[in-house]
Image (tube, rainbow, N blue to C red; front, top):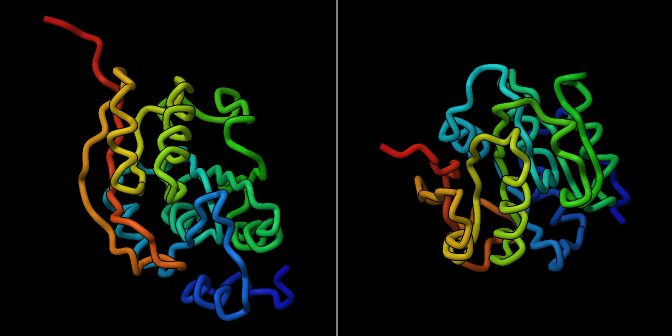
Length: 201
């Protein structure tokens, strides 16, 4: 358990500070934390979300991406399974008021349809476990209110998404392993996820 609290307004080096304090990441959750707000801003820019759109983040972690999304004026629903992060993540997003919602649960046990607007986006750094990452993405897209997404995943996850005929996963960028603490154990991809059109000529 982390003994030394972190300040809400600390936006640089949060992951590195957790590392220095001896925080143990959970391998069963594929847990790795984004190290800088600059990397979060680059991902958000790449996502191209319309102003004020509703965004779902799965695995919000230390809130680096969540707070960047909220600061840009979007509404964020941050879902995190690790209860150890409750105090930090709640405090980190508190300044954004009703624009930021935090839920501590497995996303597969949440009624996403009742909590998201039509046309919502998934923007997440998924667990660095290829199968878990692909399974969570597939689950999120069973919610008809999620229209598209931008996700960071291990490279093997893209292939595991190919069995969903209704989804298109396109690699749009890469991201350095060193952008995370602990460093990512494998090559990462930034994927744009969209729903395949069912229209035919």
